[in-house]
Image (cartoon, rainbow, N blue to C red; front, side):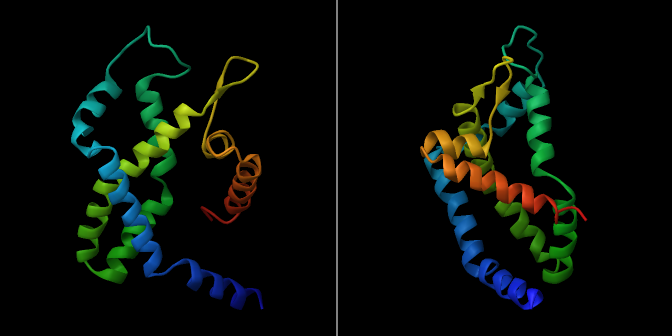
Length: 159
């Protein structure tokens, strides 16, 4: 019974419309950010530059590595192998294309996280999707719901 329920849910969630929604979001945000991908070289140079007087809890390089660690994981390694196995070598082209346009989506996520972060009682920065949902949309319930679903998803990821 649970298998059939999960199978129905998976077929509802994972479909061609999801690919269109994700890629459409990538294209929309690429256009709205003025093709932010043009500045990739500058961003990489700035992220590895040393600036001991910069404010914040971590260095630019530390922030880059944290963002990459949150984005690139075992799912991406398996995902590439699975895509090539199921879709053939042509899948690599689509992964590159989505990756290039996905830069705008990742940039937008990071921008919102920085814009809506808060300083806690110890003077440390706290932020993320929960804070964006709570503060940008004025929907505390959405932030709580996101945090709960993320915690539940963590039980089934990486096993």
